[in-house]
Length: 70
Image (cartoon, rainbow, N blue to C red; front, side):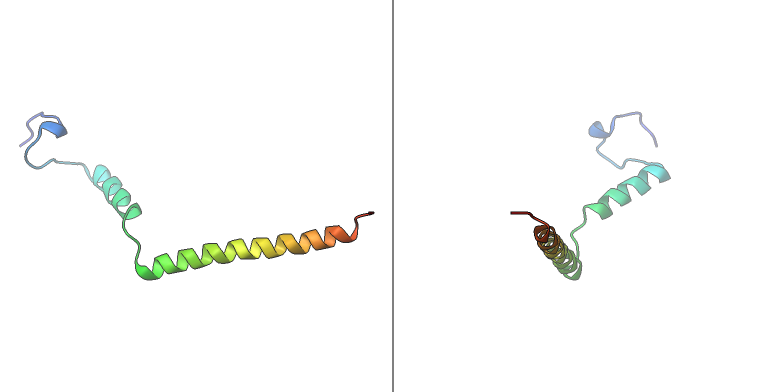
C-alpha cells in the first residue's frame, strides 16, 4: 500500500515502475564485476592497441625522417 513517504524514510519495500526497474538493472549490469575472461580480454586488447599505435607511429616517423633535409 503506498504511504506517500520518501524513499529515505521507508522501512519496507519501495514500488518502482517498469522503466525505473530497467534503469536500475542497466546500472547494476554496468557496474558488475567482469568475469576473469572478460578482464583478461580487455587488458590484453588495450595493451595490444597501444603497441600497434606505437609501431605505426615509429613507421610513420621513419618514413617522415627520410624526407628530412639535414
